Every structure is written in C-alpha cells, then in structure tokens.
Image 1 (cartoon, rainbow, N blue to C red):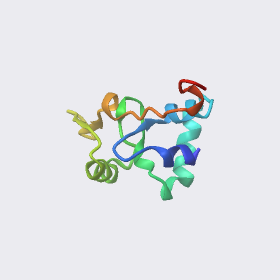
Image 2: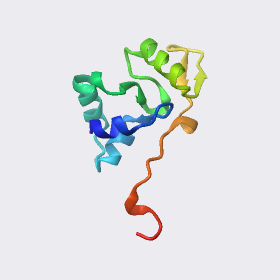
Image 3: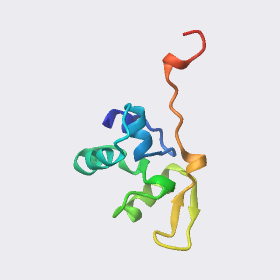
Image 4: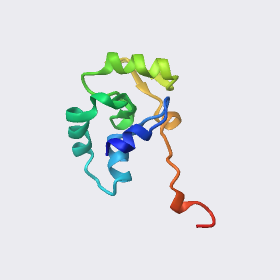
Length: 102
C-alpha cells in the first residue's frame, strides 16, 4: 500500500478510497489506519479525504507541502480554510496492462 502512496507524483493526490481501489479493495479506513501508523516516511499529504480535504489533524503541515509542490488548492469558508482542487489534482495512474496493444 505504501508503494502506491510513494508513486503519487508531487502536486497530485489520491483519496483514501482511491488508494484502496487501486489495491482491489474498498477499505478506505484501513488505508487511513496504515497511513497513521506507517506513513511518516512517505508522502502522506498526497493522500486526502474525500472531497479534497487534507488529512485530519495535519492541515497546517500538509498545506506547506501542497504549496511547495504546486498542488491546486481552493479556499473554503470554514476550517481548515482550504481544500485540494481534487478534480485538477487527482492522480490518474497509468496501468501497463490497460495500454493499447497489450
């Protein structure tokens, strides 16, 4: 699972549910649990809540990463005062098995 997180390019994000789906699962909460326990050495800020909200409790430190990487953000009128522009920032991994000619 952490390999998927490591493969998300700078400036891009996936929701917890997207990471689970790439692994053939619907266990978004399990992804969150793994990120909470083992995500420190990985780009944890690139895994966001549905709707593009940053990880709970890490809104400030995540924003620093988003700004440094050029992740598209939107202003919110409530805390955390921003979200990721998920439609623009969502990473679409390319699967070799689905490419033409395979």
